Length: 382
Image 1 (spheres, rainbow, N blue to C red):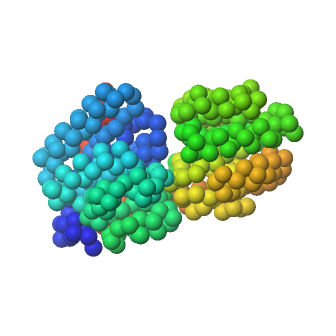
Image 2 (image 1 turned 90 degrees about the horizontal axis):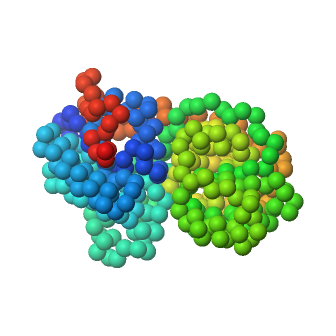
Image 3 (image 1 turned 30 degrees about the horizontal axis):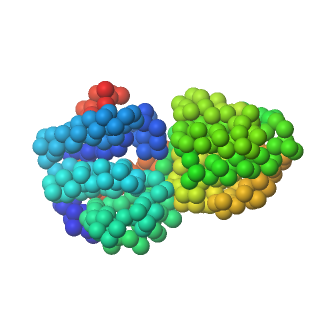
């Protein structure tokens, strides 16, 4: 057991401080925390939620970060030793959280380091020099527990840290109704950041190749990012009229597009465990995705989805043609995908594992008193 895990032995903790992005922020961490909140996680446990990051300009982000530091220090002063649950991705997300982890470790608080984002391996191996890699390992080694989203990431983290406590807890999905009968059209749905690392340029090339045989083919891109560059590429390929950029969309609009789409496609080069994929599968949408990160842990190729190698445009073209042409195949994949989510990734099942972790670390359940004003976490920028 790591050094800071030892502090949990022989005593309980009356408080947990959770660090993540502000509610409503456009990203996977906020989506996961939203599921926690909707499932009653914040009523079940004495949790103070502090937002360390928010959407907006540099000044707004700076103010949110500084405010979060003061809130965290105030929580330590008020409660003493608490359990600290850190939701982190790579790059600035990690370095921001390192400030809080350092302060928590100085106060001898057990740290749960919860890794999100598919770029952490690249960040550690290629973007950090020896000193920064040592700092990252130091934080990982001293955590009371490291939570990862899939077996792929468990194996990678185990190759980096000497910490023996690595728990695999996937992202949770709230239950919902299966979508209505699959539409008759050829609409494909892409949900995520619109950038090269998500395979969006590969997808445009494949749409251009398929369109002559499927004139009604349409790609809906929901997200933000390199919009101008992607639109230019679509224009160069002569398919600008077949591509719709919606910008970031909320849950209701996302669900509406899932109901209208024939398939969900995610040709990413790197992923952790994308919430968009889980939500599409939960809706019964057939999925075509790359076999990267935690995706193969979720999708069994040919059973509840179709997988291919990143950058293999010929394979992507073949798979999309199959799922768009073969309605029986699409229906079978969509039904199996929904079954997979219900069996393995439902919020009931996943959050139960997080509850077990909290109990093992010595956190006492809430006594009925609300830890924050309902709907208003401690660190949400106003």
